[in-house]
Image 1 (tube, rainbow, N blue to C red):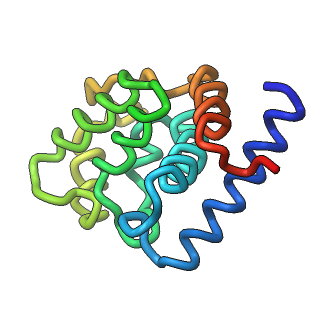
Image 2: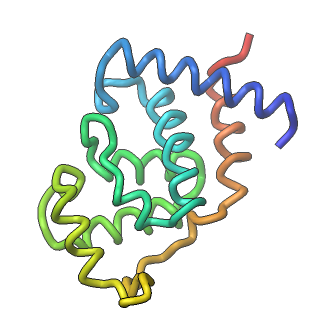
Length: 147
């Protein structure tokens, strides 16, 4: 990513955060701002600890994981979107985004004594560099943070 891309991404994220603060919920945000904020906020979790790190966190307001998946679809990363959907479904209970203890218990049950996960989750989002270029292209396409 170029310096100009990084600056545009930073501006778009700032605008999206302000929109979140204004409406108070991911679900109430304009879809374009929602996409920027969800992808930009969650991708570092995937990069630093995969799906486990993402699911160990409670996101403000506990938005449905489908919102994250849909955001990755919108920026052209359908593999990442599907990995989120599949992993969320593997918890085996409704609305896993609202049950941190349930998520942690399930992940703990699938961990070796050395601390490695035995879950067969697709970690394609981990280390994905293309997502950032796609997100910048999405921001440009929708005129977020430009001008």
